[in-house]
Amino acid sequence: QVQLQESGPGLVKPSQTLSLTCTVSGDSISSGGCYWSWIRQHPGGGLEWIGYIYHSGSTYFNPSLKSRVSISIDTSKSQFSLRVTSMTAADTALYYCARVTAAEQFVSHWGQGTPVTVSS
Amino acid sequence: QSDLTQPASVSGSPGQSITISCTGTNTDVGGYTYVAWYQQHPGKAPKLIISDVSSRPSGISDRFSGSNSGNTASLTISGLQAEDEADYYCSSYTNTDVVVFGGGTKLTVL
Image (cartoon, rainbow over all chains, first blue to last red; front, side, top):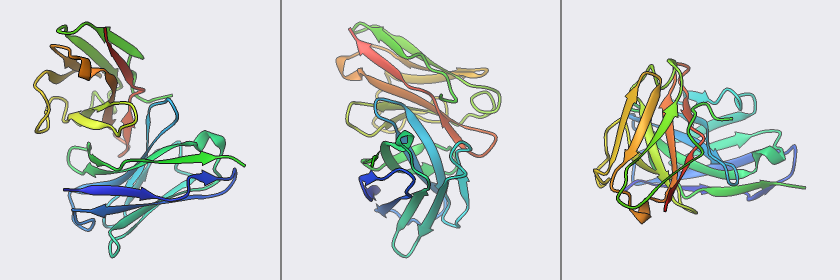
């Protein structure tokens, strides 16, 4: 079955850049039919879609985060990654990587989530 | 602020039915059938319970059903059970090639 696992630092200083990686197993990250996505959830809050990437490298981002976010993919390692620049306390959240079906645009598989705190 | 509007909370007694609304615009909920619903229990990742407005993935109880009308999608849970107590989120594809979520609804089973 498809599994996704996030990895990265749990603590980031204000103004620094966050880098997270998601490792995919049980599915080919190179195959079409799905997008590889990042979604976050603020403490006690709702879900916020950050963006996603297709295996070809095409990316789509939440307009409110677009200026600070990038997503890349490494098909040889079956990984995709998130970078968020100029982190602030408002970026403190649980970050999920996820598999989104390309046709119907729903999340079929979620990682367990990795908490990120922005603090000096 | 979320792009799709959901009630903050709903409640019902065991055995009853409840409906959660998800209101957007004609550029998202009203313009596409790509509306999904997720259930999230505390400390867990969300779980897909409805896709494509009204389709249930394999293994999801038929007590869960979805529908839409105009710019509002709805999730109905019938025969409420204690285990249904959770947060529920809707999502929709939009005309700008992005996905948006609702703010979430906390369901309390009385």
